[in-house]
Image 1 (tube, rainbow, N blue to C red):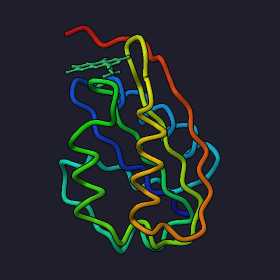
Image 2 (image 1 turned 135 degrees about the vertical axis):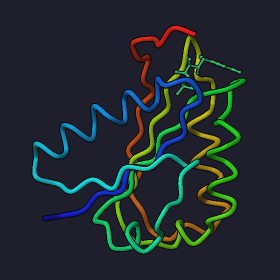
Image 3 (image 1 turned 90 degrees about the vertical axis):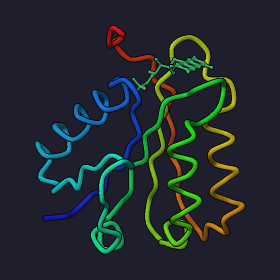
Length: 128
Ligand SMILES: Cc1cc2nc3c(=O)[nH]c(=O)nc-3n(C[C@H](O)[C@H](O)[C@H](O)COP(=O)(O)O)c2cc1C
């Protein structure tokens, strides 16, 4: 079974909700999904052996969330993997340049050749 890593940050739950929906769809398509929040202990070896990496984060103050930024800064090896990356953000009204900033950060970390598909997703809101 092919493995996909899905790593997300979610402050209130919207980004996690979208991640859960993706997980369900991927599992139906016979992928084994390694599903982790950046706040959990993450096994880098599992990510390394995954076929692809999905990263999801909320837009906070027109930028990617600090937790996801810090996760990437502490795990620069992630960007040396040769595999497809899929990046998404959830937002309330206007995502500004959060995905572009994210892509720039990946490039600054010497990301080798990679594929990024991205989507700005206005999800069903979690009440808070
Ligand atoms: C501190 C804070 C800042 C936010 N800034 C923005 C913003 O600049 N643009 C936007 O469209 N939504 C903004 N939002 C809304 C969130 O992006 C949106 O609710 C998102 O889906 C939250 O994801 P989460 O539930 O996974 O934390 C902000 C929310 C918070 C709490």
